[in-house]
Amino acid sequence: MEDKIIHQAEFESNLGLYWLLSGAAYFSLSIVGIPLLLLWFPIGLWGTRRYIRNMSAELTSNKLIVRRGILTRTENSVPLDKITDMALIQGPIMRLFGLHKLTVETAGQSGAGALISLVGIVDAPQFRTSVLEQKERLTQRPHSASPSVQPDDALLQNVVEMAASLKRIEALLSQKLNR
Image (cartoon, rainbow, N blue to C red; front, top):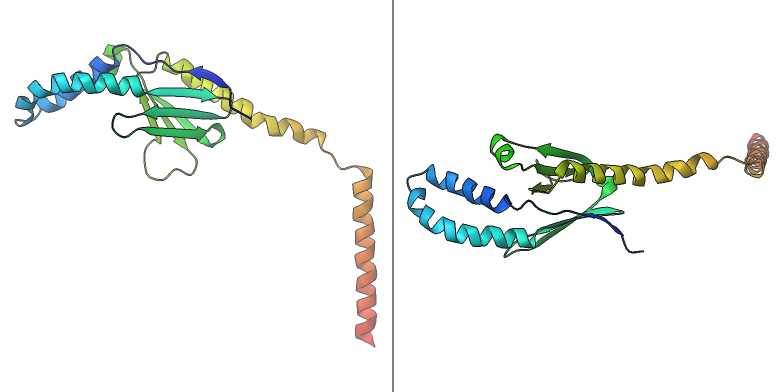
């Protein structure tokens, strides 16, 4: 059965500008980096546009799929029932740009930090809510079936018969040992 796509994330139009200016800020903090600023703007502009074009995040009925990368393309497919935390982070510069960072942590992930980190999803709080609601729907399904499963009389009768058989076997064994 193929997963149905529930929500396809879009990315903010000013995300590339945010990354470009963030990179420029890091370069300008070092003496060696200041001359590199002249190279950073054309290369960074090309790189950020290309990276954003290759980014996608899809919520399906069973998993969250995130794709990204320029040279090395990465696809993370996280089953919704393995997600343990989804955090929304917004620093002061991100607030100026109206951006959020969404991090996803899973059960059994190795290493510290988030397994997936996405910056610039349009309406990130709503995307997070959609993922968590679908996760809740998925985890409630098995529990809704369990109350209808109750021991019936035939099963109980089998258990009683097995207990009686075990008592007879014990009695026969004790008689053999006493001889």
